[in-house]
Image (cartoon, rainbow, N blue to C red; front, side, top):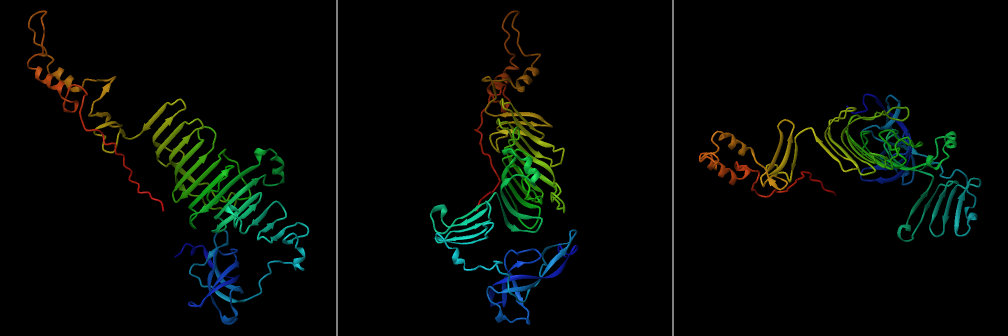
Length: 455
């Protein structure tokens, strides 16, 4: 059972196309479909011929044909969504395709002047101009035009220029709700009333934004935006409006399954650079009304904020729980250089992966704090006494000294002296009386198990 079987049914439709080639070994024609319930199809389809009407000798490259194609139709919105899986396509016959130019052209060479031929509308000047040096210009009659150049040098060789106030390009059509597309241009307002209010240069937003789906699944996509902050997110791909939400100069959002990675740069204040990694608990769901999708429900796993003054706030090992967003780690550095470091679990400081038992400081929430310094631990350049010295004092507290006479010397009792001399000479890790030590240097080896490579 496929994903369409419960809500969609196959509906045959007669479409228009042009034969691209004939695959004689398979007796199949490649047809580019330019008119269907889903508009122009991306790439040719393979069709067989029905006899009659027509015979295979009537079909050749460039022939306009009618094709029978089953499409999936239905769902809550009762619409066509895709070609029926596993369907076969048949050429029904030929027909005369519509002319590209609707009106008759009377002696177009009479429009030749200064090395160019013009096909333009007499009122709007919209049309095509071809130059004798190979350039071609497509003009809308307004400020929008496209210029194609031939030959030339450097970046001007075989170039394609597009000039427009708002430039839209559909990169790939993945359906009416999820389009891979980009937009660059000036936004003055959604209607005449809005334009009348947007009179300041700050109200006229310019941005570049792109939304690309990684697959036909609406859960995997990449969105970027530069300029006014209005990125495409999920099914929110309304291209006729730009909403200025945050003062962000650049943003990029990558959504893959249940993970979402967000970068925002240019927000004034503590979040001048904002990097987030979130758990996607509930993804965007397409709806029929604006803005086109319900908001996603996400919980933070990692967040880095860098302020305009260089302050840093890092929160990591998040629980991924929306709203509460509990974290197991935090690093904060303010503009005065004050640093705060927190970890809810065991916290270790050492030189490398294997150096915790050599030189390290370990803060354990259950066992307390351990400082390991096999090469010595000093305060103001001096080793300090250890517990072994206190234990020796405690052991011989009643017989520590040997009294010879009142007011005379009181040497260490012979019973206690051997352990004292031994404790003075030993290193700390062997039971010595001070933190002096001797060990091999730390390895300083810090490993990374990632095996990242580029292709």
